[in-house]
Image 1 (cartoon, rainbow, N blue to C red):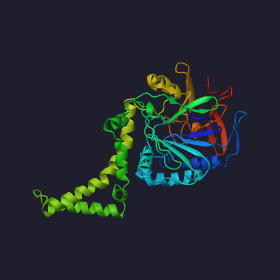
Image 2 (cartoon, rainbow, N blue to C red):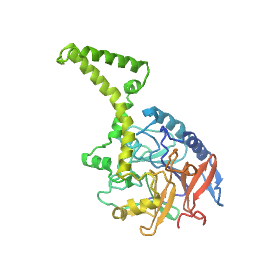
Image 3 (cartoon, one colour):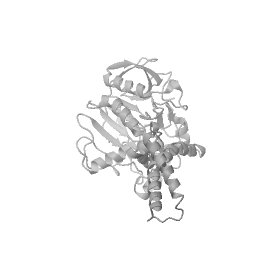
Image 4 (tube, helix red, strand yellow):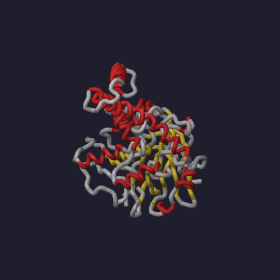
Length: 386
């Protein structure tokens, strides 16, 4: 059982730092606002919020699948700038990895395996690969310093999962890609015993320094390479029957290998992030765009849910900030929304976060230093439990 928490929690998801649609400037200002927060009044209802003790980054905080210009440097830069405000502060940070930033969990496991410390100072960081809290079955027993690293959440043995108690309710936090149908990559990973994520693999290759410099960029280096490749083709046309041991055969091997290692990863990485979402949408696999009510009624697995000892399920992924209480399931489903320019999410519902205190959960919108109420635990006009 997790101890009852005294200080408030703030939960944000789907920031997609480094992505082409990320509201980076807004999020950076929001982080600064949270860091300086003393007391703020919610616009639209008589209620005050206070500085949090815990900040939950509920998945897809980083855009590692589809960074802007297929360059993860954009993700690194925006992450360092936006989150540096939290460094060294007396916050507890829980990072729940999503489908677009699963590398964070993988890096954490490697750090623990090699005895490396990924941060220092007063930062209290917990990295979780699927949901928080985690079951005892898959939690690493060892920790190093103040950073416990948790393995992928699996429910093969259906162990009881107790939610974290905040005020009168228990909460479970998950990114929400668990509600996608199919779960091809996750199932393949379980069968193979290793992480299987082709999109991420090619994005890794596309971000090798040489590939970034040459692949699909019209700069001096790529123009020289294309010129050399054209020259090779002309030369090789004279050696149609050449073996690999000949000059022509060896030249063909070098040219084709260089092309494979530079241009192809960029092509595949760019195509994957366009084609795969369309496939999921066509087959109605993705949960993106679904409301909490649709998630509860169409995607929630009641059989597995029996092992969740929680009142509230908090998730992101679908980019739709809303809340729905299912009388059938007897759980409150809350989506924390997003910080991106997404056509599925109306502009007046972007830049949202969940504030949790000893009264209950409050779904709020940050608006340039002001806080507007979307759903509130107590207010009768926008109450959560309807």
